[in-house]
Length: 467
Image (spheres, rainbow, N blue to C red):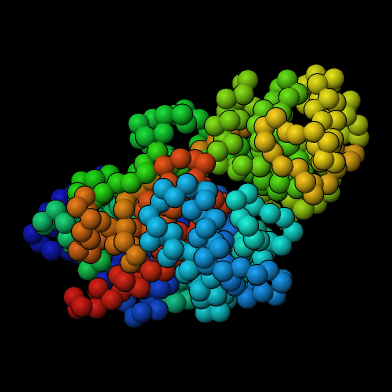
């Protein structure tokens, strides 16, 4: 990745608004920019434009939506912002937190009403840290479907999406204003494209082992469940341009990735009354704190492995997610008709597993207190057949990145906005603060969609003044 002066001979093509990355952030930005009247091109290194979004459950949290009201849920942006701040310990930019909390519901309605995305509310279980049920997703509850629907909407809106187009160079005459980019093709050809505004929507640096080791040492060498294209391009370009980098130690992990299958197991299996044990048959944490911080906790167990323990009732809830259905089809979900059979299938000491299960069930009835601090009130008992999945912890995506203002303009180290550079999604610093524990479920797609929409609109306005 490099910054070079603009080519003396000019650019082969000029597009007013260029976007690097075709995940939810980039495509939301493209739709907003096109809606504002700008000509837009999205540059995607992969042959299929899905980005990191395809690896997610495709859920966007929003407060005060019509879908919530239809479900009888009373919620608003202020309550949402409180939950975000509580989870991150008030370490994120307060203005950005307030912005994304207030703009999430309008963004969901915009995608639904204008572009036909068939969102529905996840109404049958709670996500850790959310005081209300506010997760919105497409029917399959998969990032693949969300990506494909955004792609279809962008193409119908006249957005040019160039796949197999890796951005290798940014052109800047003065070290601040972006003049264009150079893309490379799989066959070695290169092309130059000029622009009036550039939006970086190419996620973070989870796929750059050296940057991970530098900024998130506790996850160095861990299983990376994110997109391999997340190589830190945005932060490296930004640093070279004098941009401010913030909360580079922040990340989203997940403590429940089926091993060795590499399939995400929804945290619903825990939040609905399940729990985790290690190879000794013992619980080792308060699993309800959140799946992000649980990643490092699971990795710290013997051999970095744990077991999710739940039952068929919970499996039925989890089955609404495409990932869980894939896990079942692949054989990752083990079933047992008794505790003894469950112990045999999971290769843990049967007496310890029985004692752990007995303790959990006592706690659910209000007898005793959980030594790890988990609150079990209202949790249903587990009944045979029992289910188990062998899991490990993983790094999903980084939450640190380029500092931005409320129009998603990239800020320099003095706090001033760079003239025509924007960042959204994982390229921009998120609202999770500097630690994995600050990640509130859905924070990644929240900032991707909301900041993407704002970046696209702002970039279109800027490009119009340059015409």
